[in-house]
Amino acid sequence: MNHPMKASPSIRADFDFKNFTFGIQATDHMLTAAYRNGMWQDYEILPFGNLSINPLSMALHYGQTVFEGLKAYRMEDGAVNIFRLSDHHDRINRSLYRMAMPALPKDLFVGGMEALIRTEESWIINDPDYSLYIRPCVIATEARLGVDASEEYLFMILLSPMRSYYSKNLKVKVETDFIRAAKGGTGAAKNGGNYGATLLPQRLAKEAGFDQIIWLDATERRFIEESGTMNLMVILDGLSLITPPAGETVLKGITRDSILKLAPSIGLEVNEAPIEIADLMQWIEAGRDVEVFGVGTAAIISPIESISYQGNLAYPNTRPDSKMAQLKALLQSIRRGTHGDRFGWNHLV
Image (cartoon, rainbow, N blue to C red; front, side):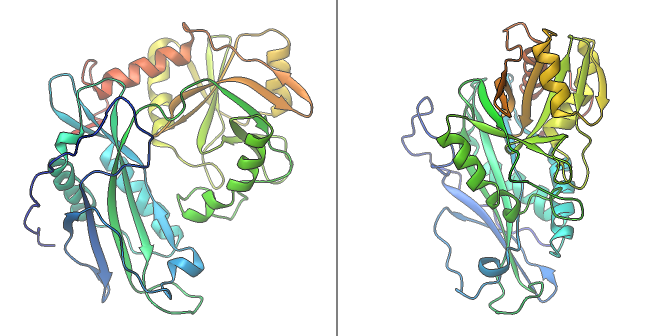
């Protein structure tokens, strides 16, 4: 794949980096590349703007859409770091395979992202609470009303400034009516339909005064799976970190994997094992030291301060000196370059 001429550097508009809403403001440029005649074409870096697609485009009718989410950080020494870029490339290709969509070559995904980040580098400020969110996505663009995999696609990379996804600890309800994913489905892929199906139960939860949902398994409604759009973790008695196994119905989160690898360094034993919701409630109600939190690219680590299940409320530990707070600080220090990167996660641009 040939590399096109680099776009002119971004001239950042008058943007208030302290006060903004995530996901509303894009940066000045975006990357696009088309798939046609059985191959990906060269990417282009263009001014951010609207798309023009045929109303018959298959993504609009049959849900062939896949996306990723990752972040770029300004490190303390001034360098720019895209965190775990190679792992995100691997994961988007797993999602694309599940949705019968063509894989993205490494030089397109990685090389294109590097070029776009260099163009938009002025949007990555030196602030420990700030990051530049990166949204790669692929949509089916073939204009055809036939239930089959598309033969044409559009790959895009979009960028948006970001601070904390959640500004407070979360109040969650355990969802017992709706499900997020079932075995044999697409729960392990980051495709649009997975997220669209969660919007109604999340809206109902918010109308009832909750911030998010804890999803249970589709078969027995006994075992915890995820929390909203995040992987879910439990730290028990300050000694053991437990998280549901990733697989067909639980997304293999990159932040999840990062936390699992870092946990032993602060004295935690790691267990990827099923967690029964009844057991979790009983541990908290019995007065054990229980931390419950969601992890994800956007949320990083989001503490859960209350859990509602079948009319009962439980209140996990959210103290400032919690183990989850230590893990968040450690992860952030690696991303910012103030702690050694022994796993080779930082991709410097």
